[in-house]
Image (cartoon, rainbow over all chains, first blue to last red; front, side):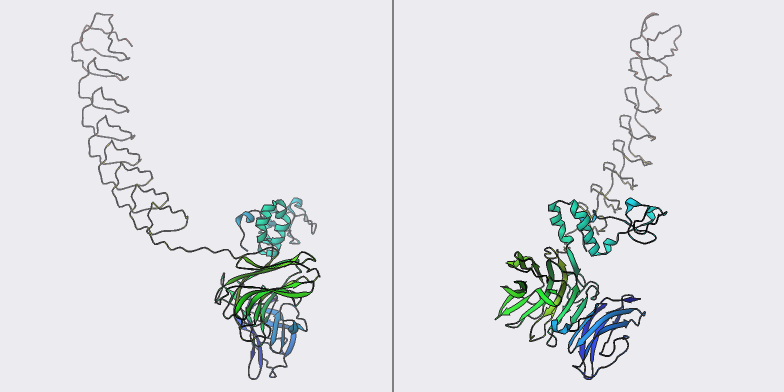
Amino acid sequence: MSFNKLYFNSVSLKSLSDRVEFEPRFICPKCRKYFEGKITADSPKHALTQHIMKPIRGDLNFNGKITFTMPCCGTKINLYGAIHGEDFCISVEPIEPDWWMNK
Amino acid sequence: MMLPYSILKRLPMWEHFCPACHTSLNVKYYPLCLNCGLHIEIPMDKLKAPPRLLKDAKRLSNYVHEKIFPSLSAAEREILARWFTEFFNNGFEEGDFSAWTSTVGTIEVESNNPHHGTYNARAYPNTGTGYAFCKKQDIQRTTLYIRVYAKLTTLPSSGKTLLGFLQARYASAVRFQAGIRNNSGTYEWALNYWVDNDNSAFAYVASTIMTGTWYCIEAAQFYDASTGWAKLWIDGDLKIDITGIDTSANYRPYNFYCGAQMAAIDQEYEVFLDCYIAADAYIGTEEAGPTLIEVADVLGLSDAATRPVRTFSVSDVAGLSDAALRDKTFSVAETLGFVDAVTRGKVFAIADAIGLSDAALLSVALKIIEDASALSDLAALPEKAAIVSDALDLTDEALRDKVFEVLDSIGLTDAADRELAFLGIILIALSLRRRGASISLLRRGVELEVKRMGVELEVVG
């Protein structure tokens, strides 16, 4: 079963020493359990438990469809995510290429 | 959506669905499904289900606009319109952003500062991004009202304007938004609106604005070449009213934003947001919820307890003179006498003596009667045996079919008004006339057996 709504209650961009993490905090629509989702520039197909790092901050320029798989029940959530520098966006619809210019 | 009963009762209770194509049936054409052509053989009451429109605010709004509103008077429509002009209504009560289309920047749903309900949003425009929003994509609107409740922990620095608590955009271009400006130490509500077809303008009104206080902020714009307007309300009061502006270009907004934004942001801000509504009519402030009042006095039975489901701890004593209107059992501490009006089918332990003069309305067998009963007492109870200790004479008025032992003598001078047969001995001397005379004292069909020999009496009946 898959969903395409924003089943998270927060989303943040963490700037760590060696990486930048884009983290929606999901609430599984089926189990209502909380999970941290982490997205990086080269993880368009992403499982919640994986951590793929992108060490060069500032070079992040990601815009694409992301599938999150809930570890509790396997429910998939299909969303679009975009990161540009310190700007980030997550949406149920494709994000326009110059989205960060119109914030 | 909270609906008033006057509207709810106008809505359909059931919707019927085709068992084949699962579309809504037009019951006028039952057993035919107009969608798939199926001739339905299932009884109609097996096809019904709660109407889908009750689960979908948009369907509900459409139904009311199309089906109910045409049947209402203009005055009724004006009253009811506020319930059914909402394009979007969200107080973050899902606990997440699932009702929204996208988020940008650092914004979250939390439960620390709700204005209504359990959850609210917290927008955190910081020095990194300068904005934090959630966005709902809708369709273009000619008249658009947006209302939100907002609370700040930090007011803008001097010369800064924090905007975007509510915002309407065409694509990513702002059409109108509301915020707060610090005009050299004076705080002002700000309305940014679209004017002269494709320009942005600002209007401000000074006000006392404080941190930690919820404000109901509502802004609206109407798009027209000559009669366009823009308005801002704070806590239900119209603060800014711009009229007669040209807003005719076809760039009417369709994206609703909620959050906060500051150009060249100078510090981190925290804005709590709740109760977001977009509509085509004035929305106004949230209605006040129920107020809990603590009652310090004692509840007695004389108080009118009109709620059906509440249980009160009653500390005073209930007497039978209290009006006990409910099917409840009370501990009755005072003594019950029959002079008390006992109107319930209950059994009481009676400690005082009962006399027949008491009005005994209960159909309960009384076993011990301590005082004497005379026939002059009004014995209103049936099937009761009483020991009568005084003497009965015929002057007593015996109203019941009872057998009494009569101890006194009866003479013909006694007025015998009853159709009873007396077997007795007439001991007094009769002053009889000769045969053929009448005895005027005996007026009824009473037979007398006279033991005195040789005397015949003709009794005139």
